[in-house]
Length: 271
Image (cartoon, rainbow, N blue to C red):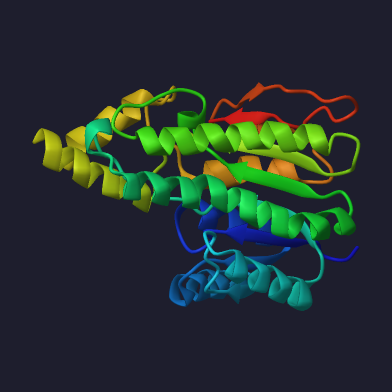
């Protein structure tokens, strides 16, 4: 059976990197999409050293329709139709609502929400041509509830969840599934930035701030990127022999928006 092509945005670090590594280990040809070449090349080297196949597509700015169009076209030309699309690019700056200026608001919405719209719209025709297509949007528990001091982030991730549900409805009678993964606080470079902000604003140490975020997760600890990647790997599989909860210590709750004959369409996996 020929390898399926997976494109991952934000693949240079954190959750995106973990997803790219997992999909490569599963046998996908992985297109590593992101703005900066160096971290993407490092991920590619790691994949190649493990016997996988990956290609770098840098300059892939999810806020720039032209860059997206060029990146999608280059990925298809290099690796074939996109069978799996994972939207993972994002950022999570924090600020009190009254100090959230329009520039910050627009930047977060543009990257986290509009970026998902633009990339998915550009790639969807290819995903449909590939057959048994899979689209996974990396959202957040901030897309299901609210958190103080990240109003723009919460709004963007609520939007991603809503977009996921809407597109799942539209594609329910096709062979394309659309799902969102909603991790809690995850041990990534984004968290490192949050810890710095919390320490600066509250006077707490980074260790105290980290412990506070960990307590917000049901597991009482930070989620690992590999655990998120494990869930994505399961969602995009054409055959799902077991729940990711069996392969991971994380409980995975499925919030169902079932659609006709598509029992997984429009669901959010909450970690």
